[in-house]
Image 1 (cartoon, rainbow over the protein chains, first blue to last red):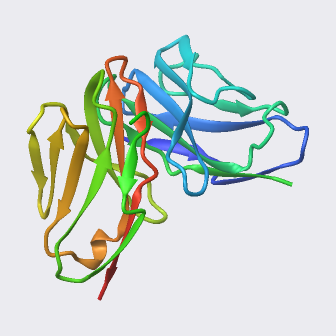
Image 2 (tube, chains in turn yellow, brown):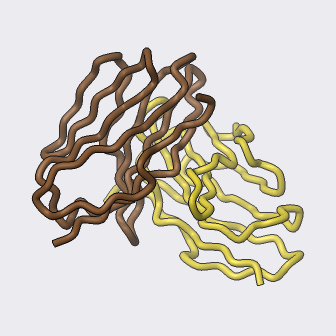
Image 3 (tube, one colour):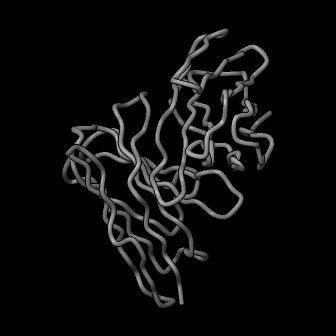
Length: 111
Length: 111
């Protein structure tokens, strides 16, 4: 089955800790994206990658970091510099310029 | 309009009735308009990607129209069914293919 997976589904973090959210796709898509959703708001782009070994900041990149060492994988690290990290995080992939395919999401809670 | 705006924010519709809602987007530097359906506990799923002014797309009982000159798109659902209950998201892409997302319209179908 082709698809996009995210893990874990729920994640709890203590203040001051870095955490890494996993995103994997087997759709052979070049482009991958990380979004954050907060209640009552639209999806906001954190980072995106058009191709392996390249990525660009989105609208709210501060406090986050990514890597794209493999086409299939685009992990997101939420660092201690992110002031308000509690949110729902969605990963997506696509052929660049086409509709995006989303993973099931990770809900991060800072304790 | 600098942001993507969706209205109404939520909508209750009787099963069997038809309904529609609106997505307003910046008309300058427009490239494409995306519609997605996001059911509870699932991932957002692409419905339509539209690029041409006057374009109309249809998938079963759901259809969408696009007016790029005035910056709006309508999504129509004919004969609503309980399985149509979801949040409907639209996103506008500029020529750099950066998507700006609306906050969504939450549709609840009453049996």
